[in-house]
Length: 215
Image (cartoon, rainbow, N blue to C red; front, side, top):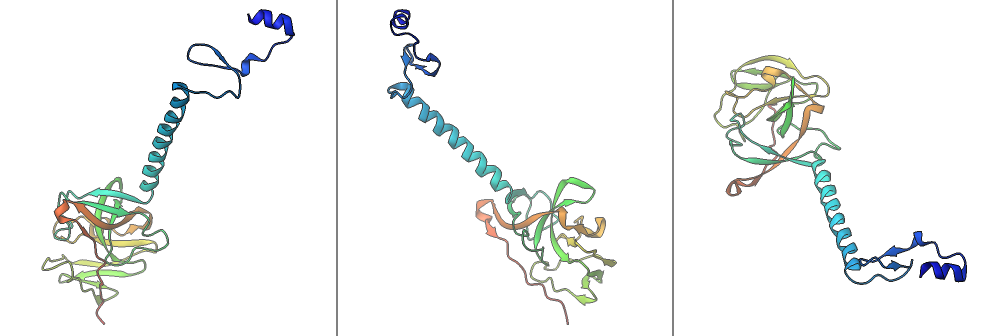
């Protein structure tokens, strides 16, 4: 039939621009497609679009927040083993870690190991511990808001370099912190802990303590 049509009218249409329906019949370009094929294309597009959007949201969120599983005792009694916390990576996008912040950081010398610690010393400060009392530039630091009766072992005066921070665990008797591995560079700090979300009955925000230095 197609051959007779070509012989009668000369050059036929460019069939490469034509589609076919499910039965194999030719569909001219611009023709409206109805039936299962018409319904199938939007559905597949919506599925692909939904998957793409979910991936964008997931990887986008990972740029700003992450979760952290607390499995040690170094931050007791502020945090307990088995708790899960939310870490804000965006907290220090325009600012810097502050004294008293609880942060997740990469352990110096072991970049795959993440630790939970509290920021005590800031860049340029001198940190010492005498008779269980932290001294910052010779002034006593009041940690009564979170430390309770826990004791801190003595430490010789340590200078915190520019761009680095001195961190300690709240449970000083078991914590591996800046007393053993030294001040932590800013780039090793992942983010600030802002929320404990599990167990649900222990869910709470993490307050920013106001740490005062003696006059």
